Length: 460
Image 1 (cartoon, one colour):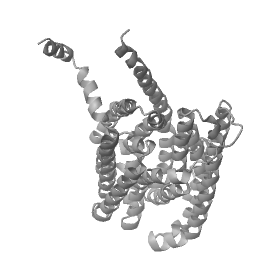
Image 2 (cartoon, helix red, strand yellow):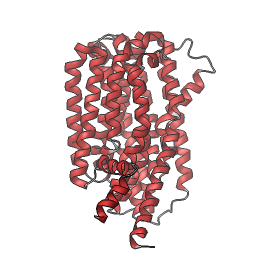
Image 3 (cartoon, one colour):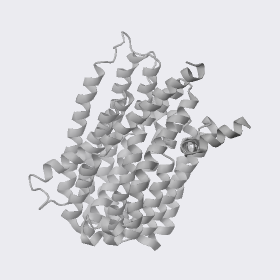
Image 4 (cartoon, one colour):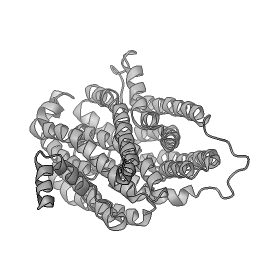
């Protein structure tokens, strides 16, 4: 076998591992479809358009503020564990996990107390909906179990247990919600407050499951005789990564919150359900990204730039193959899809079309922000996220009051496109990684007759 062939074999194995791992991660994330969308269907059927709008104002506020209870520590833990294992320092894994859980418990408790104390003035003075004060206070109960569960999921991702990590991150808590609510008939008389209490209980059970799984998988990690000389700086590493997470949280949550302030609850409800439907594509993106992020950290620790480029191209190609058919359905049949949630939700068709375009842009730039975060380019990522947040907030300020749900959808899609494009440009400039170009070369290389043409040129 030639040296070139030998050199290509590890790359093929790594590439195959990346594709197989991503498909496993995607298969797990597809469990989101019955669980998470079962949850949204229950909420829509139970509350109707107007009360659904009120619920998602509260739920979006919870999602946005919960991130401040983590501050990116869960993602920093994923990166730290992946790098420790790649460097042969398995003894540092357990102390890093204990430190991360302690920090998240402290910050989440502070955020829970803060939201509980500010619920009444926020509902009365900002949202102009005083009836939402009690649901907001109840929503604060979920911060601690939610964030501890997410941190445990980050540790599982660092151990390359991506399927279990995605389960704790995404689909287990809504599955628990549906499993409890449907058989017991709780949906018949459940209001927003009861739904929020059941959400908090679901997060608690998901976190306990994550703790059990982590303990089981840590049994195979060697225990060091001594603790690491210097504890990992998870706050320092996590804060720039938090800007990436906070950007995503704002893009997901801010439109509903802003619509709750400047528009009617009906407009908020229409946007919320259209947004949840568009996020089907985001499930594909996050499923592949969950597999790619620790692999990026490991490849960067080995200074394998070609491997980074190849893994990023595989991630983008896999997501595009799966996301484009779903996006096409949203563009062609938005009203029919939205009416699955109820006959009154068809009015969000225009917003769904705009959101689908934004998700196509997100698919093109799959895992690009995470690539920067996992390769120590956090300052650049921090600036990109600031620009994206500024674009989002400016777009919402201008478009949401005038365009309602469609204006909010346009602001969110524009912010998504800006964030991905800037991250892709920075990855090319700093790491010489250009996954869409490599993906294009792979596609062209598989066009029939191209190899023969190239051979004739070389013979000439």
